Image (cartoon, rainbow over all chains, first blue to last red; front, side):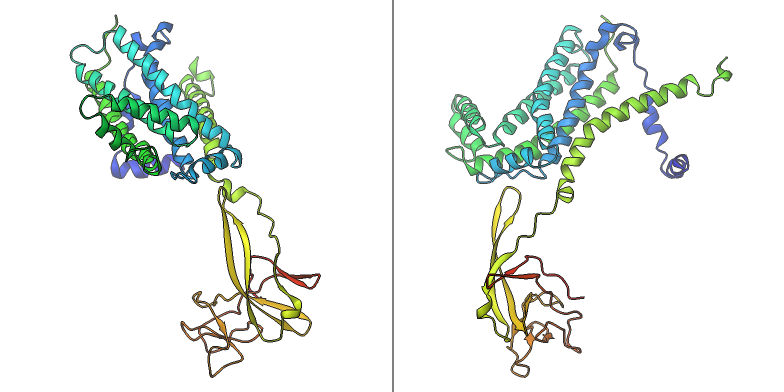
Length: 223
Length: 166
């Protein structure tokens, strides 16, 4: 039955080459942990992507209950965590996953650095990777404010003061980020929009470019 | 050699990978889906009866009473005020919802000069008898919805969800 549904679709739109391209793509021996166990270091990029997918999924579900408003934000987080089934688990996945993503990105960066994989012809992909790193830091920074508790407030206070130290445009930059002179209702909605729309959009676009370049250039050779 | 086995090596690997992968994916997805569908699986809040009026104030002419209660919206509690038309039919208390069963406008008692003994809806001139029965030949197709009621110590208590009459 499934086979026939697949064949019916494949007859019309020819999907086989799309997934065959991925499935038949050979993993070189020197990056396959099955051949040399030490090759597990090559898994960190994939693990970064895996945790990013978990972040996106758990984040999508969290927004079913979360409200980015100074009156209701904290109450809605408390509600989804303590009264909704698996709320503690789903919020926990997003909370701990945020740290895991950053650890995985860091390990992935170390692997690329120490195997010299950033060298010609892969310089552009290194640059894209660094941009991805900044976007992930931005997601961590903006997401930290959303529960609207004491830690959120003061962490953002610190972040904005760091922005203020930028020469010449520091004050402007801080006001632009906060949506005003102080951390308030406008900061919360702003950080929410950046956290769930702007940065994830940029993240997905750059990840696509990152992956396409890997396929174009191939995986770098053994040490 | 390979022919002796019912399941080929390739097939076994496919099953093993799909099974393990599926198990891991389910572990990630299951909590999120259960989290998302929680509203339809939460036990219905007990429909507390609300004190609306004194039995002594009721007559056989329908009067509008305010019904005030708190509605639980998860992290927010909403103060709701609804209007209910209540009258006595013999010894029986009748509490009707003012929502017209045609398109949901609000009906009033006796506002149509030609039919002072009926509920009247100003939107499409729908009419209802005193007991809520819709008048044939006017737009509504079913009677006004009725509130569940209970009399305790001379006070009328109503449920908060009116239900259709038959």
